[in-house]
Image (cartoon, rainbow, N blue to C red; front, side):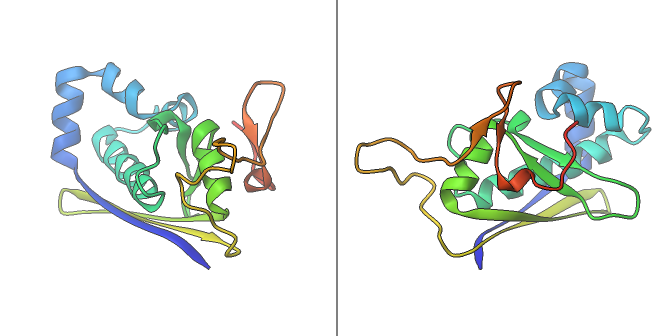
Length: 162
């Protein structure tokens, strides 16, 4: 069952301007450490950044605004000739679990100076509103923290950690 759909477009020129103005600070603000490592070799940094920025925005929109989620809680992963995936960390993972999300489908494209991304959140229909709380006023999450303090759940199954 589809629980959320998000789409975003990002001008590659906009990312070129941001990188020229703020340099590494902007790169580090938007991308997680594993994302920065995976893109370190890229000559077309603005193009890569625009695609990931659009992907993160699309996921935020699919999560109804994703309150409390920062860019580093959303990690785009990719491999050559494979579709991109989105790893959710901390508050993003907890929110996805509250919503009943079991899988994030992600598509990113680049053309004519623009990057675009679509995110589809899929679950079993046991969804809750992103802001819904329990009777005692506490938000629910079935995640557990591992030894690094990282929230883990069934969304992690079969995925390597960076």
